[in-house]
Length: 502
Ligand code: NDP
Ligand code: HEM
Image 1: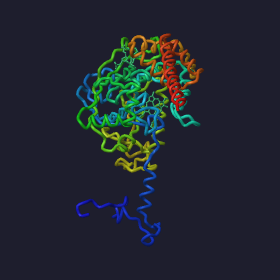
Image 2: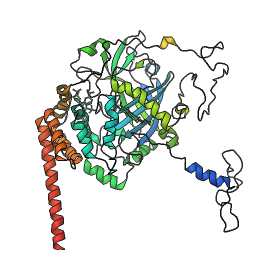
Image 3: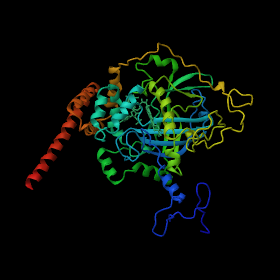
Image 4: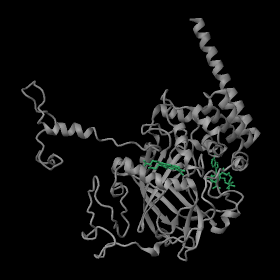
């Protein structure tokens, strides 16, 4: 005992025993007054918080962002103010559909979240490893996610539900193509790109707004698993990303990404052949070249995973002066959804937790008071100023940081976006011009493997969507489905032969 710290209760009193419960007699029952035992059991019952409704399985790291190129003509954000400037970053990568215990190397889109602790508050870049998404209207998001999660009766994942949903809306085929391509299973977070995916905006010191897209390109290069490699790996370890990431950082082999932006003049949005605020579309590089901004380096493993990664609360609503939103309706919905999720998952004061507290902000002064777990001083040194306006020089809003006006026109309505032909253009370019024949063959095979158990009607509806991307795409997947069913038939025949022999 002499050279070890004394164990105490959470109220600071010495603990007499953490091994032997207090009983009535040597072999008797436990006394209710053995409060420390009850406290220990009760605390254990409260050690879990709800997992994220999506992106539940994740891996995190800490590091820095360094500006390498001057983009002040586009953004007056403090973090981009000078070349060489560094900003602390907390990153979390994730899979979308699996629960918190899901295997890391599953085929899925990966989340790619960066929290930049800037002196003007936290900027959260909550993106994916794909530049686009499955749907373009937030009404469709909860249904889409339902098809990715478990069937209410079988409690199993349901390819029938996934492809039924996707077949009903061609806008999904772009993202499904990327998901089923080689890039659907990166070997770990360091070997994939990140994208803000939505169109955002930036404004400069003169108040000029540009539309922007964010890209983070892996410096370690893309590396992916085939289905067979992933299956073999998952048989050995379900935690391959956590292992790779942790060990890379511990050994000084720091993952790095180069940050770029694509920029569109505000008035050019209306001139594009596609809607630049549609999340199912990219901006072609040839028209909107990548402009280099800086480097993200992950160089520190969090000391405590729960505290820094499970408690991390990212939200597209966290922007800083110089970075803004766009009319993308998916982005608009996400601005609401995330903070609401955090209040449910982590509690009212989630932004005061160590993972989220705006540590680099010069001042944090707000009028939110009290509520559960209000463990920080909430008077910010000025106890009389607990309402606004007040006569006590309490904090006041800074109108000079207002973003420039956003021009909006048109009638409020529910616009049906029937963009069917346009929905096939970019997937076709990806299929024909970006993927080579071997990649196309693997895409066919991966998609057939994912669709295997689907009914004939869902299969035919989905093949009709692929046909409109390109006839070779539909034919390739149809052939891969046939090959897979022939292999299954042979396997069944072999089994029957063995059974017959027995
Ligand atoms: P480019 O020919 O200039 O570039 C092709 C892009 O495709 C590169 O960014 C490359 O990423 C990426 N890529 C390569 N293989 C895959 C894959 N299996 N899944 C997803 N992305 C992949 O493209 P364009 O700008 O002319 O667009 C053509 C098509 O490329 C688009 O329709 C879109 O599907 C896809 N794409 C476009 C992006 C964009 O922002 N313009 C971004 C990503 C994909 P990398 O450079 O890291 O190798
Ligand atoms: C997580 C909602 C679209 C990327 C989440 C969470 C919710 C949510 C509720 C859980 C948050 C938490 O509990 O911490 C939505 C809605 C969407 C949408 C309503 C569409 C309307 C997207 C898109 C992207 C994305 C388009 C990427 C471009 C992420 C990521 C996470 C996440 C990366 C995990 C964040 C983390 O690491 O903690 N989403 N989402 N989501 N979402 Fe979305």
